[in-house]
Image (cartoon, rainbow over all chains, first blue to last red; front, side, top):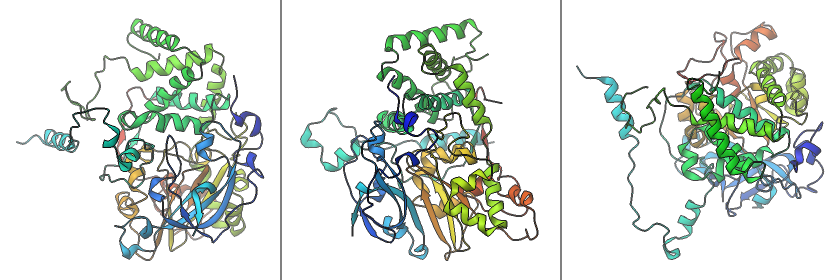
Length: 117
Length: 149
Length: 237
């Protein structure tokens, strides 16, 4: 049986630790403003539709990993940097009450989903 | 005196009625599917964040024997290398399609995904799976209808 | 819950008790096939079951209690949650038989630290990702499409259904755990706990508090009671 990458690569090390150093230089840094790209979500995505075209601020570079869209077919060729992003709820939802305009949402996306604003 | 249980059941059932625009032609012509409908039909079913839904009573649930075993089997399959969890999720939460996604129980999809994964990866022939299902059913019938002792 | 109308298709219909469950049959079928084909052994399955038996919310509750009492440990929780977890007996890489973390929960825990004006709550809109190695199995309601649909868009409404209402000047930050990070909420320490020991503090940091749908209180040691949907053949260990 062909074994999934974890068994060889991650034993004793952990995942996503096993991909450390493989993504190269991160394109974005903490504090950068980004927009979420509305790429096709054909067949699989872990980039939620409710985030698409919205703007966010990078709050943390969290780890390197293959994008979920590739890892879902056990392809680990091209790890990317993953970023934790902070959105304002009033930017995401037209009906979010202005009186709660301080409310936010945080979630992670890989680099391919982000473009500079 | 009014039977409140039936009233509550009635409210529950009518709450499930949905208007439907019946499309007389299945497999429509391409010119009848615009970008928005393409996106809707081909969407990843698990991506439900922000969809409207109604307030419900939040409940806990007792775990079934089969649910526990299913979870463990999924993790052990990944431990022993048949798949990784992301592949399992892709198969279980998107490949199954919209109807199964919303129509079957949560762990029902995990379980279906084990079966489909075994067959897809050619560890088991579909005919072997079919025969095994029949065998387990037959054993249960001979065991007073019990699958688990 | 139950009804006697066999033609009823609503979801509250109880199954006929004489039926053999398709789910149970398929579960046994695939497990036996996996063992027959040598994909895993019954012992593997048992080992993972035993690992699951060790899991529950106590380590996460203790992590929060320790952080409340020790600012250095609190900083460790922020800077190196894997190391902080070791101090409450949880090894995200090696506690489990695989020795590469649990396949579904990975090894990137993150502690979301509440402040007086920032309240975190966790959801996984795409499935039901949950920090099992330190918090145990996820609750049923957390897995529902309903919770996953609504928490990201109507958090204050959903939280009020859980009994939590927060003032306008508190920022509610919803964390949607959609990738490999697994979140645990560190709530703020409640009033009425001055001079308490770590044990006493850990007791009031319950599972719902660690997800973010409740806040710890000096007078509460168990999560608010909810209806429990019974299983047909419940798993008990």
